[in-house]
Structures are given as C-alpha cells and as structure tokens.
Length: 81
Image (cartoon, rainbow, N blue to C red; front, side, top):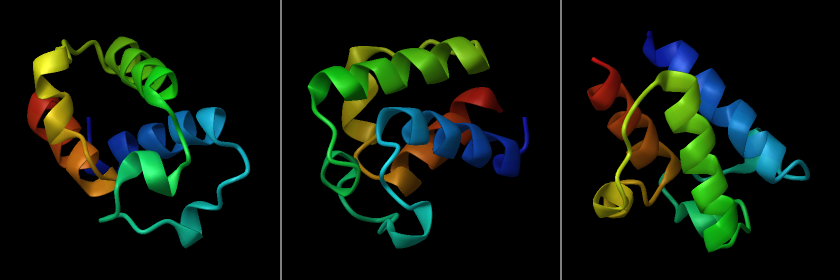
C-alpha cells in the first residue's frame, strides 16, 4: 500500500474517533492523544481498526512507536512494506 493510501486510511480512522478535529489544524509531530483528544480506549480502537484494515499485527509492545501522527504513519509504512 502506498504512503498516500496509508495516510488517508489513518486520517479516516482518526476522523471516526475524533470527528470534530480538523486534520489541517493537527500538529503531525505533536502527541497523538493530545492532538486528537483521545483516551487509551480510543487509541486501542484506532490501532485495532488500522490493524484490521491493513492486515497487520500491531502488538502492544510497539505502541511507544506510535506517539505522533507522523510516527504512526512511519510505523504503518514500515510494517506494510
């Protein structure tokens, strides 16, 4: 899957969890949970949705690699390569 498709999927899934957030206003290098005002359950739902959509194993041990939008995007790119 291309970077653009992964980014679109990530944005779509984040939009489902935090529909009031405008993606244009998000600091892609800022803490994901703070930027999207999501709690740990929302984060788990995000990871689960992305895992299913991309057919990837995203273990809890890797959650530290998913701290920002850009971190999560890079993680998904690397895992799907």
